[in-house]
Image 1 (cartoon, rainbow, N blue to C red):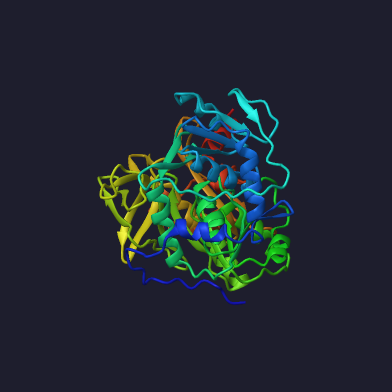
Image 2: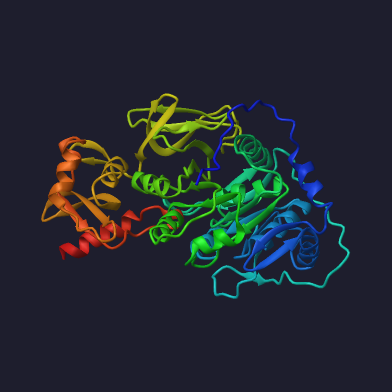
Length: 464
């Protein structure tokens, strides 16, 4: 099976593409399917009906309006209605109560709409997107270039949960680059396991297929027990997923199943080298990884190499004694595109791009020396019989220790001494964990990021 991934690097700016015109072109074809979710397919006519129905329920005067829903289709319709009303829609993850609490910081009060009956502290209005068929003549209206058009919530992995507002200029300029970079066929069918209330799911899972005149399929809002079944049913040209989804998919591949060729994309956290190699050996498909954040948008990509290459129009540099990565692009969240935005990641420049060393949150001082847990984790994943690895420090019997949590490959009995010898040949002695704990799984946050706070609790519980 051959990979469908063929990147093009001949992007020329400015593009003549008019994204707002493309969306309006789509809305001229009422019978065109644009969304598929939870067994239902939605057309342009369905979108117009839903928008008109929501129009009777949503306050058109509030500057911000928030939506909490599992349905990507309802989210899309809510967004277009908010734009028509010159409002900024805020997209909430229905599984995270912390995001609801963030709305209390807005003045005036942000109306919260949901189609999920639930108990939340913030006042909300229960809505229904179902309505009778009508003859709506709704046409999408894009906000002005420098106007805020969307609000996404960060995962909270680097601190308190917060809202990141995006301007129309930022969204459109990034989409233009992605459309030139990726080999998307006209009429593309995409299958996204990442919901569109994450910016990655919004750009790749929702907007790119729609702008290609295709259909956005979503398999979100529920536990995906059989990803290969979804892939074979949809037969997508592009698959949008996170590391945790690829771990699930790899388990299914080990059972001897096959998957259709497509452009497979991942974001949210770097994939473990062992996962990349095993996935490629089983499928002959290279996963396209996207590096970025809610604040910065897309920064770089990589496929078979360890080196991250900046996206077109993106400048990357490292700065300061901690070699923190800084970014400059038309879609970064600085006040001006010419300003540098500081990330929470640490790296080193290496042609034709850069390497990721770790996050500031995972960059630690261990016995007076700087240590990146990501560097040690990646090396551990190359070790014999290692499926996943997470590294942290903890006080053990009054002495600071470097501890590795290892998930072994199924059926493999790990030899801890052999694994430590493997690391000693490749890392400085102080980077080799003295304590190795074999675990069935590693706790993770949203989008597959390791939950180091939970790991610390596991260590502390073991010391009690």
